Amino acid sequence: MKGYLWQAVANEPHPTRLHQWENVAIDAVGNVIEFWGFKRNQGRVWALLYLRDVALTAAEIEKELELSKGGVSMLLRDLERWAVVLRVRTPGDSAWRYKAETDLLHMARRVIEEREFSFIARIRADLEEARKLAIAEGHVSRAQIARLTKMETLAEATEKALKLFLKTSRLDVGGMFDVFKGDQGE
Image: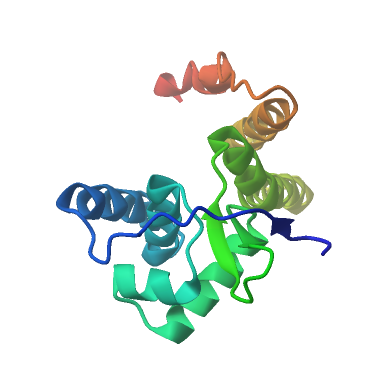
């Protein structure tokens, strides 16, 4: 089946209750994910699947994390769209199971491509437009134009750093903030 991973799923028994260490780790990931602007439970679902390292059914995820069926369905759909959770099926088993993407760098790249990169590009374009509008008005001070230009330059540098990261998996922000040097006296 295109888009889905077929694999044998281990028949190991799954704990029916989270261990204390799992609960702490899963909540920690959920908190980080929420801080980054995603749904907390998206992080919790991924963390459960990542820590267990076995594919679980939606019903098992519901039970383990004490979430509703509809909530788990929406969370899994989102996580699949971001390619951080994969849908798998054991031959002969009619139930879909879900497994965490374990390549953390791949996940970071995907999120940056889909979310942060487009956001930074939009900010850069807005700042460019603001600078052009300020110049067109004619009565905006040189200092204000210079500050808009610096903001635009920072957005461009951020965009370039993200492009480089996506290409090389290395993030180099050296010199990125040099654009603001000398601002203290203005």
